[in-house]
Figure 1: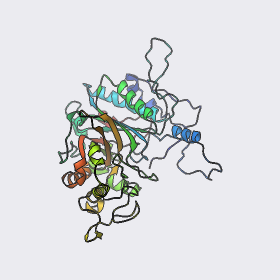
Figure 2: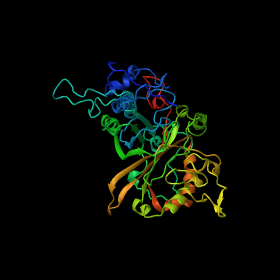
Figure 3: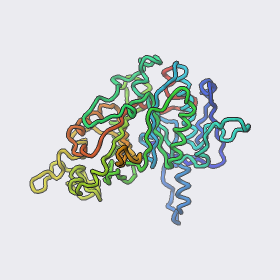
Length: 427
């Protein structure tokens, strides 16, 4: 599990340098993360209550190391806010793509440490600021930036076919989908998560800005209110009011078994990486709100308040799919939790990292809201296997529509300053 750090004040950070110099001087790029690891609890409990100001300052100063075995934003405890963006590459040569990836990697290291990617106030009045400035003095805010490569990046444009992982392709069509082509696919993606929405927005805005002549935004989702739990986090609720992710993957054993890619990918650059599935799921909120509590609970297989399986009394009780009430199954076989439970799927698990979203009203005046479902797994087949069952049998389908979709190969973390994502592609 990636441990957070808390940077100390007064430490200078090397500023990101743009243009071709970023690629030529990649070996000189600095991490920009200062401070000691804060991986454990304090030696002794504080004698006085922590004030709201101190608590807010701690959240603002929280940072996660950028360099390491895995990218941040996967097993990192989910933050409160998300900006997910898929991009199509408009660059026309491998060198231009290489430059984008080198510049982005350097900028990601800077922003996750709380540093800008250039001068907010250049010395000349006619100069264009290097950084847009809206996150100035806000701190790292626990920002993580996770980059992924879509299957389409490995087509004939850049000669990357030899680096494509085995059997890596767009997700197959599945029941229950009503996908909008404008919300589907992408050559690249950035998942920005932070404790403050402005910091997450600033990160994606500046990455898009520095590559604006070589990539274009395809689709984006702004998420609020995490809908998944990591280790030592309480389980949050989705917009249907139910706790989401009670049985999420959290421990190292499960991460190794179900999330981190090994040698089976056939590509060294993916060892230690993962596969990201992104699904924008629209909820029919008004219809759901008119359903009875008994039916809602039967659909999920859990109580709404406590979040307990209908075979138990507490949230973390292990569901008993054989239990009966008055001769009928306590948990309906077509309930959501029964269909996705690893006990009923040959042990298959995925790491959920979803967020709630709202986009105001749709064309007919209904609430346009739902779940930005994000999951990480060592093979996209894990997701597809579960979704096929859900799409054909889940009673929840009456109230949801999958409208956006993408799958991305998320490379392993970078070992140190001077490296960049995709460097192996251009050796």
